[in-house]
Length: 92
Image 1 (cartoon, helix red, strand yellow):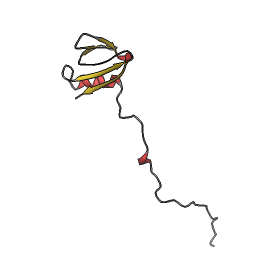
Image 2: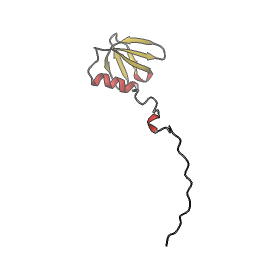
Image 3: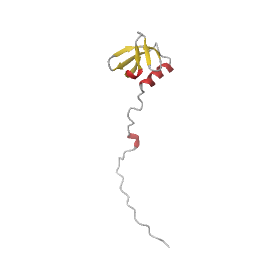
Image 4: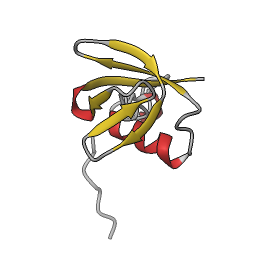
């Protein structure tokens, strides 16, 4: 008793089909400002590494010597709110 199954449609796969490996996940590797500051303190590179800090009003190259929950202190006694920082980059 052999029963014939219905025919199913199957489309042809073109050569060179893309895979998820080619997908972009955006700026996932970029660290936030707080993560960058935490990384500096975790690696004990404060006082040693110059950083470039960009805020809405200013851009400076300096060294970070301290921090509180909401502020950082630079080598020239400038207190900067962490929320005001747009970008921070470690210069090596």
